[in-house]
Image (tube, rainbow, N blue to C red):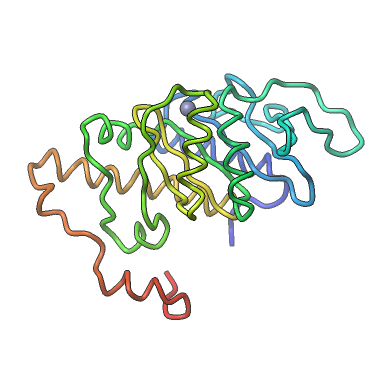
Length: 224
Ligand SMILES: [Zn+2]
């Protein structure tokens, strides 16, 4: 309701500012994109950009069908190189026509848990509602066609939240706002899981109540 309106690049810039402010990532630890309505194209962060300092000039337009530079509107844009992880974004939009925003971050707690061999627990009703399930993609080199193809294959069944082992996470949604919420809740779930682990109580950490999960499966029965 009170989310950033208007240009998709302004919305993505807010995501970048917020995730750095929230301590999810350091500097340029990730890349963001959004599908441009009625176009075979997306906006994606330029190579090497600092996520806390994004602006309209730090996004590249790229054609989804073939990965070539896209032309948006009649005014030529300054040419910037898309992120080196562009293949990951393209593969996800091709595999998931329902997805309009992809947020790839290198969030500290989610990655620490992965490196410790622990999965992120779904603890609260927010985690269950926004994250659903979290899948882990086995390690492949960042920026490679292999990590893009494997992640897209694992997201094809509707999974919106994935951890790329020892690299980062990918969350997506039908809007930037929803993907943004998922990024924040994924790291919150990771933080709660890690705190339970550090306290030696991970085996006592309860999952989101079954009663709530049952109601979630009936979309007419709940609002959060
Ligand atoms: Zn990455």
